[in-house]
Image (cartoon, rainbow, N blue to C red):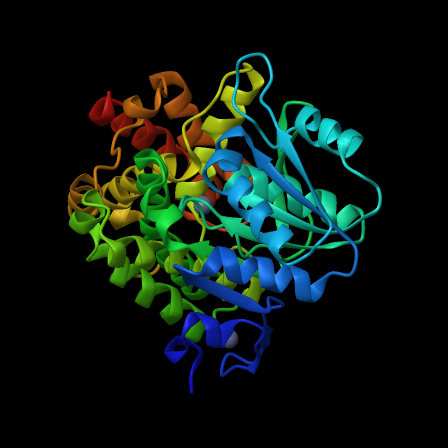
Length: 391
Ligand SMILES: [Zn+2]
Ligand SMILES: [Zn+2]
């Protein structure tokens, strides 16, 4: 059986000798997206931890899931405590030095195991703290909002700079379907946008392979493309919070995370559409402001990079597969996602700068790397053109 034929729970814990020449593995025991997932998480935690469990939530996730989960841990007879992280200065909880520092100061040092109850931010904080304390952790996902569940790194804001910091995989990912379906709608669109961004990520991986002879894994690429295609068909149903649509998105997000783990690199799931978003986010953080949810911006970034490819197609040194920007806008709109940088509060100046300097956000080869190195005049012109089209 090829990687791309496997179901998500068949991929959990796998070691696979691949046709691309590499051996891929994912160090996650279980992915459980089901109505019983929260109860199953309590049973898993009870069976895998001998000692104190600390449950990390924010105020919202404590209300919608944390409290019920703690009752379940009590039913299992497990020693536990909860830590609820609160935001500061009127801002939401963020994976920053303040929230991480306060959490460390308040948790019990006897903690043997952690449970993150939340999505991106709570997962990133718990991953980091559990890793540094030498304890394992699991996550109960409260929203299908980003692809960082199955990841080894945490995206943290340290001293007002966003950095990717080494951490560990969760031992298991639990996605209680009733929670995922009822997540705030902007989190559902964010998950959808992050998934749609993979079309450009895969295109640029192919570009890297054909132009720079970069290593490429056709099985992982196919695996990601298959789940993204499946999600694409769920755009309209997502608006109705259709169960199947929400499950497809959650599975695609976990799988995209696993694909990065299998490949030991973010290559299969992120490209220039992510780099311009990082540029926007860094700017917001520097100004002490909150930025749009990651995936909502990534959907917009995908629209922008698709248009950029249309405008410079004749400048490409090798054939690069086409991703139809019109179709991408259509799908995003059907799901109720944002499609323009204004909707995310991005100014024209910042937008232009992100096109010109987005390549500095990562060493990964993308269309922005290519243009800045080989065709800087074209890059300058296309940045101006995109500004005129989007603003
Ligand atoms: Zn992403
Ligand atoms: Zn491979």
